[in-house]
Image (cartoon, rainbow, N blue to C red; front, side):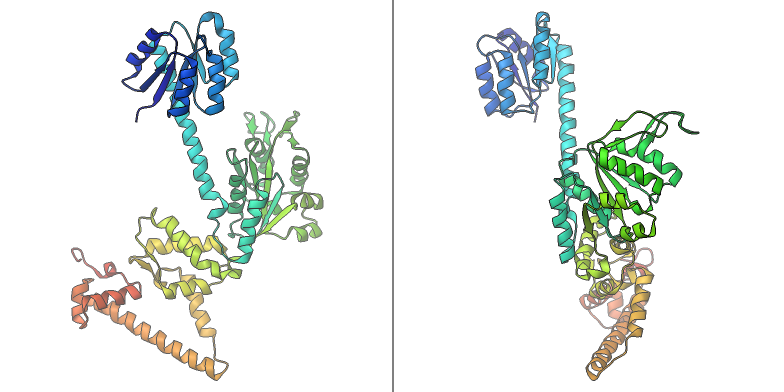
Length: 471
């Protein structure tokens, strides 16, 4: 669909010139007065309006003001004579996109239209990107039905619209940065930068320069002035990850930023003002760090305005199935895998594992399983060895304590032996049949469907037994 442009000029000749020159690329509408033009603006889906300033009846300036009430974001170009440049400047203050002097040169006008529409497309793309980021990082993307996680989501929604400092606490891998991003993209700062600095990833002698920036010549290697993360996050959010590892000499400087929103670059004397929302995260108990003397008490109290604790994964096992589903949806398209899910035994193993690396470890385990899985369902054999080993050790460590448990464990052991026999049976059949389903099934006296269900049950891939040219 062509962009629709409205030309407003009381001279029919001007209207006709625009129609002839622009109609190959654009749909051109024309109007000779402001009242008629305003009706078109209200009823037509316009991409751009080009209007003269001096017209009988409603002037171009009045038309501009009325259009801004109806469509505040519609790009508008005004045409003006040399003697009314002051009016053009006034119109720019009213929100006009650009202006052009009469007499009009159509090649210049076409360039100006293209420039204006390019800027419009760029704004639309930016709005779309912001919407996409909000979808990706908003609180609705945090997976968790456990009451503690529901509380986290409620806290995000409650604090996002404020400027309150937030401290996110949780073990490594629980999703502290995800919570910080959700707060940012749910806030009115979502169109501004979200800047991350990891206090453990940067050597302490460089951390100050990364945070505050430096002036040219401030130290050896400072060959030019550099903005720090605080300046880059102006009007946005600065996320201080693992703040518990920040050196004490920097803690006092961050405290000043929190209190006054001012700082100096390294080697500088000028006070720089910023408007930052600061979110900090830690896997440490900062109160204990204060008592141990490794963290400033005044900074702790300044950070501890709103605290969001994230529980470890081992304390919310019921969230594992929805997390598994979430990560499979997230990664299978990227990895080009048509995997429908995780079989019952593999899911049970995922549920029983203690997850010392929390949600991050679970995601990495599923990515590995997606890469290695050759069937449409992830099985135990696709999971990392440490998960399988943990499961085996757990099974071996259990002993019955009463008659009922003895009965259950005997039944479980019988089932386990049965499954091991079935799996070995299927593997041997596939080996003999060289991965051909029909041939393998015939060799062991089963029909094709029965045999397919058997190998699917144990997540066995026929491809592992095929030679070149096999089905």
